[in-house]
Structure formats: structure tokens, C-alpha cells
Length: 343
Length: 270
Image (cartoon, rainbow over all chains, first blue to last red; front, side, top):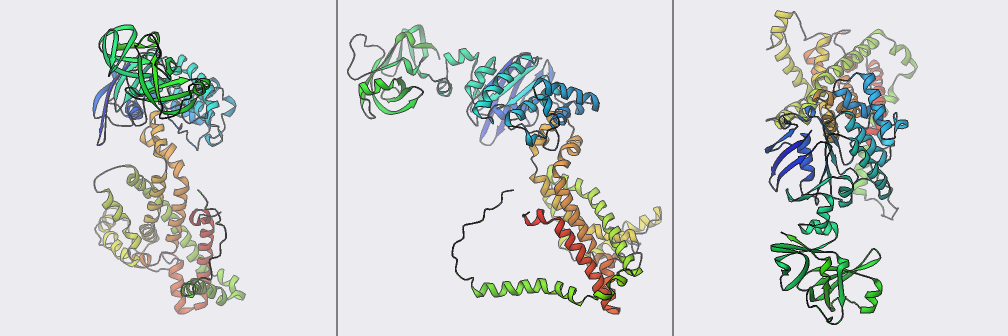
């Protein structure tokens, strides 16, 4: 059930050109900011948005020539789009009925799917009376009951409150693990993507800017957007062995690198000093405090200067150093916690 | 639907006479004729007048033809509304304009136009008459045709509005589940717009029931065959004014009943 797709959609103010390969049983998350083209890509795969160029094949069978209703695709929409005039059971039985299954068998299949998502007793209930989490599970059951070979999920958890989200996320993860077809998931939430997906594809402005295993993407971001998502400082510089020059600041790094390189470090690896510290002059520069905000148990300090950097310090340190916005400060980053990799 | 909350009362001063006076006249103008109908009605003899065969005949004919016309409008009008709302094709706006012409056309002109096309010597009527032996003008079927012609735009506009307001993404969801466009229409679209179709049908039925101009032009005025209530009212006025009042009251009662059934939908209040 390998999905191979190149999807090109051109609009007056927008251009999407996406290459995507998904192995059977694999869950790929399209991660990106709003308006990056993730949902458009998903709709193109489903056949709901026409593509201007490209191809979509599932196990070598072309899909892009088929109408939406003829594609072996199941889709879970962001706001679920359950049919309001049908019961939960009839909603789930809708797909099998459309694929030519008899009424009685379709109802049995639907009931089995409702049991799998734990909503057997809600079979006769209309969607209007379901909670958000229940509606999401019915929507998943409805998509899977049609026996798709490709499952598409558009922001499946975005409409849920924080508590429900946690529970539904782990349930969804189990169901996705049981599904043997290809799955493409769209989200702008890095946590959803990390938990649910085997592989991340980061999309910005209609193109793939980075892809890889969640841990790999989290450790080695390649764009400012990804760096912000995973909470790292990211800078581009020139590598020469164990030195990377970023503007006028020279970084000592743990892993040697040559040529154009990224330097990434966590805000917690940044140390602040009122006076210039003794010892190593590397990874050291003078900056100005731009602003401060609460960040978990710590305080996040935004620094201006040769490099815009975020630093996490304890509230005690803020008091001790007497940090105030506009104040000049010395900044250093531990070399052992500075990762460098080719750009 | 979001109900507008009652605004906190604030002193607004007295409404200006320049607006209050014409508004009061307007109310009188709309309500007094109906009140007059009630006042001048021959209440003591009402029961026996209602039971007169001509009255019952005209009433039955009106109800039957209006209902048949509404069914014809549903059969043709709902798919037409779907076409206008869901399929993009060149000339769609022009077509929509053409379809609404009977809405503003004087019904007599509609009757004349129908005669020219479906009359015995008409473009299609002649062929119908010669090959199928079907004659429409001056028959009960002709009444249905005239009423449907005048009333169908009401249904089409109402249903098209409902279709445009319905969430088309539900139809997309159905398509991803393997539903063909016909299945989508039957199992998703139609149930979603059912209230709009019902409202359109009631409106269409009311319009058909009150139809006069096109009916008398195209179908004539034969008691028991083509003489519907409005035609009977008009004729009775010349010979027997009291009978006209009775017939008018019956139509008024039907209109009020329709308005009551649509109250929630049209006035937006429960």
C-alpha cells in the first residue's frame, strides 16, 4: 500500500508543490504553520481539490485519475463532518453501504467499528448529542469502516479541549498502529505530530522544508519555524572543524562540521553573567535584554545583540542578576550542548 | 439561529408624528379590508352557503390542482435548484434570471405565453394534440400547468437558497466515503435541505391556490373543470356578492393557516 505522490496546486497567491512517499502501515505527519498548504495537500490526495500537476499512486495504481468517490481513501475532517440527520451507527455504515455492502451487513460492520472505538452504546445517538471526543471517534470509525487503503486525518485533535485531547491522542495512536494502510496526518501541533507519526514532513509556503523521524527533526531543526516548534535556538553559520562562525560570534561545537552549518542549542544551555566571565572566550558575547516572560517554572529571557537568542533562567537567577529589559549582559553557551550539523 | 437579545430599555422620546401617522395608515390599509371581509360575511347563512355544490366543487378543484401543481414543481424544481446551486456552467446566471421571470411577469401574460406554446395551435401544443391526442388548454390539466408555471419560481428560489446555505463539506465527506453524486444528493443533500424544500413547497402551494390570471387565460372558467376558487370569487362578485364573501373567507382561512405553519420560518420568532 505504498503511497507515492507529487501534488502541485497553483492558486493566484499560493503555490503548493509536495513530494510524498508513505509506506504501508506508516504514519506520516504533515506539520506546518497555518496556510502552509497542508490541508490543500490532503484534499488533493482525497480528490476534493483538483491538482494542476503531479501524480498520486497507491501500490502502483494511479489515483489522480479517479473521482473522490472512487478512491480507496478514508478521511477524518477537522470538525468531523458527521451527517447530522443520521445516527452514529448510520454514519459509520454510510461508507460500507456506498461500497455496495448490504444493509444488514453494513450495520454489523458499523457496530463492530463503534465497539472498537468504545462507543457501542451510542449507536442510536445523533451527532448533535455527542461530545467532541465522541464525535471524533465516530468520525474515525466512519472513515475506517469504508476499508480505505489510505487514511487522511486533517487536524484530528485540533477541535478538542486539552483534557479530551490527551485521551483521544493515545486512543488514536492505538488505532493508527492497527491500521495497515498508509496514513497521512495534518497538524500544526508538534506534540500531536511527535506522538502520532513515524515520520514528520515539515511544510512551509507550499514546499517541504524538512523531513525525518520525529526525534531527528526535534534534535536538528532546519528552519526557524521548526526550531520554534521544538523550542531550540537555531542559527546558520560557517563551519570549520569544531568552530562555527555565526556573524561575529564563534561557537565551539561538540560535533565537527565543515562549510555552511546550523548551530542549535536549548535555551536552558544559555548562561547569563553581569560581568565578563573568566576562562574560555568562546561561545561568549555581549547582548541586551529585550524582554522577559514566564516559561514553565523558569523565566525566558529574550536577548538582542549580535544574535537573537532565548535563554531560560530560574526566577532566583533573575533576582540575583537583577535582570531588567534594556540591560547589557554577557551570554555564553556550553559547547557540549551546542549541536552543529551541515546546512 | 441567533436571537437578538432584548435591548436594555432606554428613553427614546416620543416617536415623531411624521413617521407614526403614515405607519398607522399603513396598518389600517392592510388590516381593514380583511376585517371588512369578516364584518360583512353572512354569518347566519354561512354553513349552508359553504355546503353549496358550486363552492365545494371550486374548493375541491382548487385543492387538487394546487397540490398537483406543487408535486410537479417539486419533481422539476428541486433538481433545477440543485443544478443552479451545485453545478458550474456557462450561462448559469442568465438561466437563473430567466427562471425567475414568471415571478415578476403579470400572470395574464404567462397565460398568453402558455397558450402560444401549449395551445392547440401552439408550438408544442399542436404536436401534443396531433401525435398524442393530449389537449391542455381549457382542461383541468391546463389549470395545473398554469399554476405550476406561476408557482415554480417560488420553490426553485427557496430550495436553491437552502442548498447554498447547506454545508457542502458534508457532501465532500460523503464523497470520500464512496458516495456517487446521486447518492450524495439522495442521502445527504436532500435530508439536509428538507426544511427548505418543505417551506418552498408550502409557498408554492399557496401561490398555486391563489392563481387567477394565468389560469383564466390558459384554462378558461368552466365550473367543475377549470373554475378554481379565485375564479369563482371573481364571478360570484358580479352575480351574488355574498357568495363571493364566503369564498373569500375560505381562501383567507387557508392563507392564515399557511402563514401559521410557516411562522417560525419566515418571521424568525418562535
